[in-house]
Length: 278
Image (cartoon, rainbow, N blue to C red; front, side, top):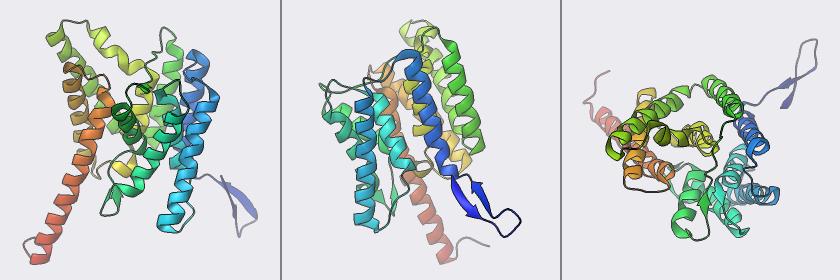
């Protein structure tokens, strides 16, 4: 919230900062999931992940940009790490958050970072420290009310920021490819589709694949990339890659951004040379 002075009869009024929408939503996901299923290993580990992300964001922003950052993004990254990784140790929470935030500043092309921060940090930890770190795997079970509340709240929020088509495309693709997997594996459709009802997938669908900073610009491109991520996940699942959704986004997202950058550069070059009419 921001307090704003007005020249009218009411000298002060509150103006909502839309950058708080995502932090409020992810906090609701955390609260609902933890109260229903106890998904957090401890509050201390989650607070450590959030604190490390916030501290790293402040330090790097001051060093690299010379500015004080808005901390909504760091909060989302930290709380995502606190929810999504499982480990008996404390250090992976701090390291994962630090890797997530550092990737925003270190891995950039033309001033833009390519990976969703928490997706990068979690993939790095799963790849580099598989003996110490595992992802959240708890399902909603039979308590469908918790899933329904999060889905409705998340869908309304994502719709308001005009990114619902990304979530809808990915979920539809996941279900279609789950059915295709049943033809190949012989497993039941419910067994193949069940993971998407878990809290891990709520964070993945509503926050990782919709991240405005790391998705392509056009609606058609966003829909295409979401479908390709779902397809890549199917291939990884068929190859028995345990952390398929995280790795699928890790591989597809940056490639899509680089292709978009190349196309924009190519179009600008053609326009400069006079090949594109106006």
